Length: 265
Image (cartoon, rainbow, N blue to C red; front, side, top):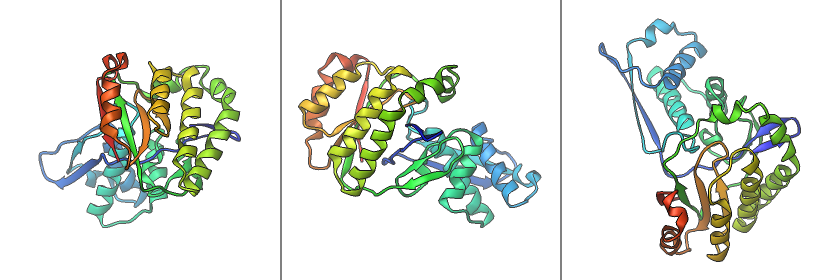
């Protein structure tokens, strides 16, 4: 995540954790989270349906994505709610239109898009679509602490620091694109590690250097971070002994901070 040309871009990847939004017309309604409620209203406005008609729609959200950790839980909630609203209204929008709508509510991640991409989180536009991989896994190191994206972005030096990282980020995106095109997890891991280290002057991740060293010693591909969050990931493939790596991590001092260490596809 960082500046390319004069705009901020990111590339996020999807894992097997989900938000499920259920809408139901009834008298006693659950409003649901504010951002997701706003998503319902956005869809009604898009199709020129009176907002009054949305007031009898109850919203229920179930998610197994941790909140406030930088794992795009808000984007997943908003995206699921938009799709559920489209379903109840029997309307359609494509993934790019849904991402754009989500970005109007808050800066968003690219997980709504089916394909990997270089994506502008502020206005929801795609700079470039990237290839995909199908044998990637990630060991997630998750602390108890949370971090609000808006706190990161409210730093008065946020823009200048991001611009300082511009050459590293350019290299990271180049490596990522080549790695995905050639299904080369080493290049992908290198891209992620470079971007993770560059982000240290915006928000430090405790034990990041130790995690990178362990990743290298265990022959993993690299380390990625939630740039505006608290989680760290070690990139592996489906043939690697993830239990061995997890057990090793749990026996390190860093496990006092990263209390939950688990695997995702």
